[in-house]
Each structure stands twice: as structure tokens, then as C-alpha cells.
Length: 286
Image (cartoon, rainbow, N blue to C red; front, top):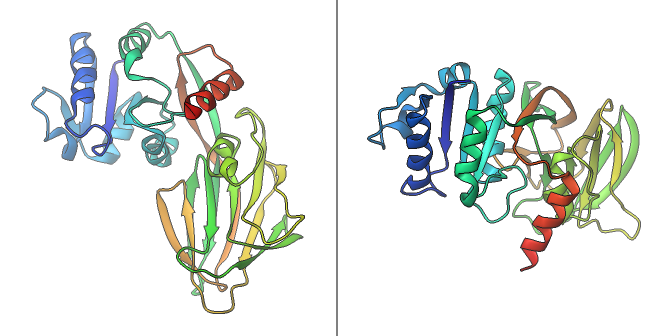
């Protein structure tokens, strides 16, 4: 494995100091390092720059520098090329980007000796049919949710599973999450924590106006249909992995199911998911 793509988040690594450290180490150990032309032009290092599509085609591993959001952004394309990702965490809390600044040397040494494992994480495919009949397709590693946006009104969400009516939720929104995404917005909304190796999809209402509405877990072979009943003319918002947004009206039809692609995450630690979860939650409380 000699072809490495580096994708930094310029909002997290503003001066590209961490990026420079990683590039210097990789070049010093005879790796071929690639970046997009836009980012590469900001550096003096002798790296190769490629168009974004060619970067994903050429590289054997993608290193993100930023946080979980950076991984989520990269995953939407990396999954199409079946390329593994590992993230260096410069954010506050990293469930996906699990290499900390203090571990960079150790991480790079393990990369050199192929001392790591690759976990395949389930993704969602979100299909939206707009009022004109045009289909829009998106992929998510964590979740997709429909919410009221800036409106102060509660909306109604009609949920079906495999075209069978599940419930009509009066709520601020509805989240459809993967096991990987169960520790993200789903957790904040009171949804269950699910091990990333599980084969399930979570349906979690956001602030439901009901005393009995609860999250529902379905199989990853199920398809979830969502229709909004906000007939007051309010436009809602579909958000996919916090990266992509689309306005939604009652005339839109949304279906969410397991994607035909997975995200491959490089893991260096032998820690079990629940050990990592406990560690991250304790860190958050400090």
C-alpha cells in the first residue's frame, strides 16, 4: 500500500500544520502522497495533485484530517470506489476519526507495517421523488433526517415500513440512522445505541408531541417510507449526514433503505466498541 490520499478540513487544520506533519512522514517513508489540486496548491511539499475523482480512483487509503464530519463528507464518495478511510481527529469528539494528535506517529508506523484492521460499516441510500417525478439519490454513513428547519410549527410525519403503516408522528422531525449513526443525532434525540456491527435501521422521532412515541428498530432488509403532512405550506428540510440539504414539501416522497455500498474504516485499536463509547462519553463529561 503506497498510494495515500490526504484530505484535510481547512476549518480544523487552518494552517495545515498537522497535514504537513503527516505528509512529511509519509514522503520520508517512500509513500506516494496525493491531494486535490485546490488543497495541494496551498502547500510547498512535493506532493502530487489530482482532480477529486482521480484522487478517489488512484489512492489505496484516504487519510482525513479534521473530525467525524470530515469522514462523513469523504465517505459519500469513498464508498463508490471501495476505498478505506482513517481519520485524524482535530475535533472535540471523534467516534469515527479515532486517531488523536498524540497518536499520529504510532498510527503512521502501523500504516507502514499494515498493522491494522478494516471495518465495513453499513450505509443508507436515500431516494427522494420530487413533485416533478425526478428522483434524487444520496448515501449516508450516519443518518438522514427530515426536520422543520426554521419553522416554529410541529409537523406530522407518516412513516411506513415496506409500505406498511407504522405511525403518524407529530414531531419536530424524524431521524433514520445506521448503527454507526446511533451515537450521533439519534443518541441526542433519545434513540438507542446500537453496535456498529448490527444489521439494523433506527427510526427516531425528534421531540415528538406524544407521551408514547418511541424509537423503532427495523431490519436492514427493510425499506422506510416517509411522507410529511405539513399542509400549512411549511417547507421542511432533508439533511443527509450533515453534509447535504434539500427542501421537502408534502409532495415529496422519501424512501430510505440499506445502501449497496459500505464505508471501510481503518482501525488501529483493539478496543471494543463499548470501551470506546464509554471512553468518549467520559471525555465529554469532563
